Image (cartoon, rainbow, N blue to C red; front, side, top):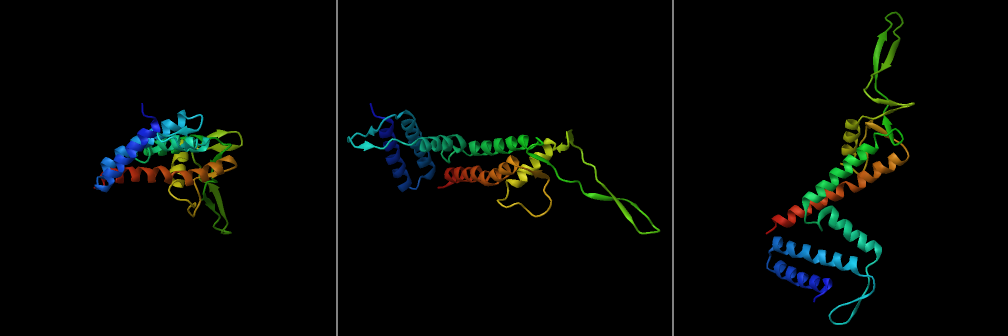
Length: 201
C-alpha cells in the first residue's frame, strides 16, 4: 500500500502535467491533494521515513508541522478563499471583543465644544462632547461597535493613519493592535490568491 508521501509524489507529477498543459484550475486540485498528503505524512511521522527507493527522509520539525496545519486551516493551502475570509472575520471580531475591555483600550478624550462665551471679556468656556460608553471604574470601556470600527480601520494599513484614533490602546492592547495590522493583510492576500488560482486559464 503506497504511503502518504508516495501519493503526494503522484499528485505532484499530475499537477506538473496539468501546469504544462496550462490547466491552472485543474492543477490546483492536485496541488491541494499533494499538500493534504504531505500534512498527513507530517502528522503521522514519528521517526525518519523512507520513500520507495529506501532513501531516508528528514522528519518534519514541530514548527513545520504547525505551519502546514495553519496554512490548511486559514486558507486551504491558498485555494479556499472562504476560509481566508472567515479567518479574517474571526481575527477582526476577536480583537474587537478584547479591545472593549478597559485594560486593553479606552475611548479617546472627547473633542471640546464651546459651552459659553463671555461677550464682555471674550473668554470662551469649553466642555467635552459627551459620548455613549460603558463606565467601568476610572476609565470608559469602548462600545463594541466603536472597537470593531477601530479594528477594521487598523487592519487596512501597516502604519497608523494620521489624526486622533477612535481608541487609545495600552500595554497588551497596543501589541494586539500591531498584530492586527501585520496579520490582517495575510488572509486577504490568500483569498485573492485562491480566486486567481481558480479563474486562471
